[in-house]
Image (tube, rainbow, N blue to C red; front, top):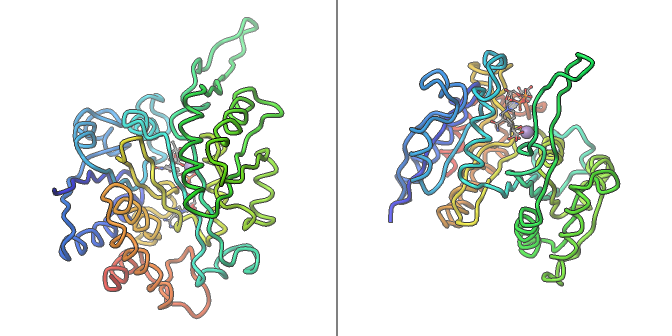
Length: 356
Ligand code: NAD
Ligand code: IPM
Ligand code: MN
């Protein structure tokens, strides 16, 4: 049966990086992949067209699709809108609407990029870690939240960090299962020494561990984890953490792979449906310049093909093509090194298609 993909370009570099992933998708379809796709709006571009960042039209397209491919959302011109109209709220809304609680962010260093990392090559060589970030709970969604005026007349901003047992248990299962398929080591990252929400997180992870005796579970405080990620990142196999810590640690981990432009992601629910997007944002500072690295988006498409279309062979085909263009010396500006061939966003996409 033909699989249907919803494509959301978003804002900033979103349309540029999506255009390159779509070239790859078109090539796969030409080669026999049984899939079709349709565009819809999310974020600032949706606000411009419909007056809201996650309009009903987009919701309908995404709900009926088997998978969603997203560029990125956000742009300074929307930062002064009322919060519920901002692009980022559209992204949070679609994650919640599709119940995409499990965000997988693999940080893999391609050998060719060992010198693009700001860390010493031997610290990162061979790096292959998976960050499992819980995506629909935590301080991102906890109520109450807001800005209120106190009795003394000054204003106070407040948010609430919350995790229920069932929310923790389901992300723990995903994390243990991911670890089982990899190096069988799971590090749960928390701040249980200070925050009750993460004290419960730690307790539930230890409880779920009993069902996965082949996986070695460890616990680490988030501040130490941030330090260990740059000190000795290869000690990690799978890292599981909450929404806010995972947001921060995954951007940090991206630099171990040379650039945030290399880090893909999959956001999954319990049905196998998913939203796939690079871990980075809309990069307003380079938008419209054909300079962005499209590889995180192309690698996100590979995850889509693997997880939502169930086509492991074609997912590997995309990943090998990325490997090949890097071996051939093609580099966008963010991963450029002496002696390489500096290419634009569209040239990089073209090179990947040629390598498929
Ligand atoms: P960002 O990730 O957009 O950019 C951070 C830095 O990384 C910038 O210097 C940018 O040029 C660079 N960068 C990012 N992606 C790149 C790529 N593919 N190739 C080359 N360089 C790249 O983060 P930011 O500047 O903090 O946020 C910008 C906007 O993006 C904000 O509106 C923010 O809310 C939004 N954002 C959206 C998402 C998302 O859609 N998932 C994620 C993060 C941030
Ligand atoms: C990400 C982004 C989003 C997040 C923002 C844009 C809402 O930073 O996908 O990592 O914080 O989850
Ligand atoms: Mn982020």
